[in-house]
Each structure stands twice: as structure tokens, then as C-alpha cells.
Image (cartoon, rainbow, N blue to C red):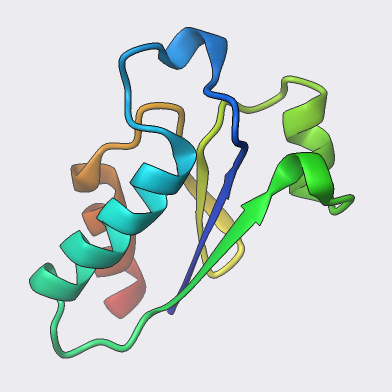
Length: 95
């Protein structure tokens, strides 16, 4: 399973007080490694300000909040990321 986190150096204006995009990326790596030690996840961090793909464009046009978290190319959470949503998406994929 591939976890992709889109973020930026500057924190989202509506996410003041929340972890930064890079902190969220590192936190997910650690949390998922502990929760699912039997899985080998691949992780990717994309600075959407430096990218031109469809998710980066949507973030630039304020269609999503960042950090934006994808599981195998599907959006599973945005903004203040919640582990329960990430876990639920992973468990749904396993079935």
C-alpha cells in the first residue's frame, strides 16, 4: 500500500496549531509502522507547490486542505489528519 502526503512548507491558514505537513508525514510513517508491523507501506511526500499533478492543482485551487493524505491514489483525509480515518481506509482495503 502506498501512502502519499501532499503538503507545503507553509502551514495551512485554517490549520493553525495543527502539525505541519512534514510532521504529519513523519507521524504517519511511525504510527502505521507500529499499528501494522506486518505491512510494508511505501510513503511519498509531495510539496504541492512544486508539483503540477491533479492533486497539486486541486490544492492550489483550494479544493482540498493540506496536508492531503492518499492511500493508493485515493484521498482518505485532509487538513488535520485523524488516525482513525487512515486506519479505517487501510482496513477496508485489506478486505
